[in-house]
Amino acid sequence: MAEKLTMDRAKELLAATTTEDHLFEHAANVSACMGAMAKHFGADEAYWRAVGWLHDYDFEQFPDEHLQHTEEPLRAAGVDEESIRAILAHGWGLCTDVEPVTGLEKSLYTVDELSGLVAATAKMHPDGIRGLAARSVKKKFKDKRFAAKIDREVIQKGCDLLGMDLGDVIAICIEGMAAM
Image (cartoon, rainbow, N blue to C red):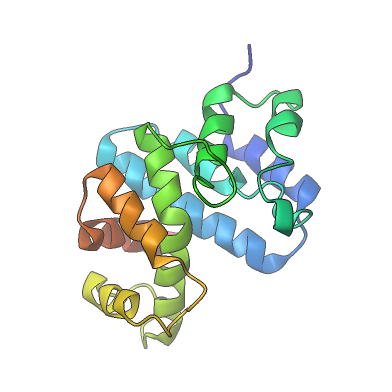
């Protein structure tokens, strides 16, 4: 039986398929958000962080076939089924049909895109992530021209799946990213 994913193992696996700095920055941001979401839900922060770190395992090598080259290699590497399913579920409706059903899966689905919006907003803010307010990110969320590639529908759908207000999820992500 596979052991629960650890951060060391997640970093090792992602490093085997990824070289681009911006993808590691994204992995770190998603990981930080996932840790904060786990804390919010009273779940295993270290584990959720590890899943967040590894979520784009095949993206650099197969950007047009994202998540189609993930399941078998991760299973062969001894990654647990819960982690694999969560990683696949973050592409629900985009590149997989794995619907997020657990808190872990719904959180990863939501914060993948949201972390990008928070990071982009922080770059525009004089104090960066540290002084960033959720309302500033919500304002940018409404401006479809700002960080235009970020899928706002996915973020809102994720918040709805979680049964949470967008502003609350943004605040949790800011808290997680500010602690990095």
